[in-house]
Length: 104
Image 1: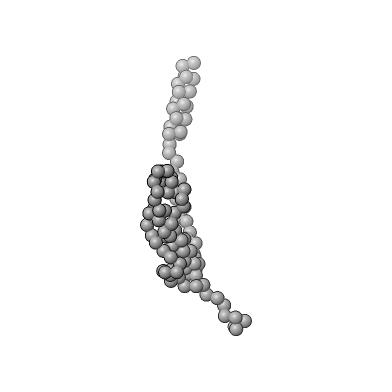
Image 2 (image 1 turned 30 degrees about the horizontal axis):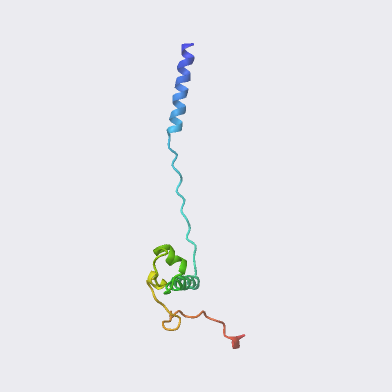
């Protein structure tokens, strides 16, 4: 009877040790996807346009109310830092290349 108790306690200790062992995950190398120059240029152009689209000198009325409260009468342009106009300043982004029609 005494031997069976000792065996069980030894087995329980062995199980606890197995649970305590830390499993180290295998490190897998990730292959980089090759992106063409044309694709990179297009992505850069899009990011530039999205940034410049946010650089306008206006804000919605509800944003002013939310920031300053009902009592304040402030022009929405105070909330935005950058001023940009489609007439005054151009972005100088090259247009995309189109196939010449006379080549077929």
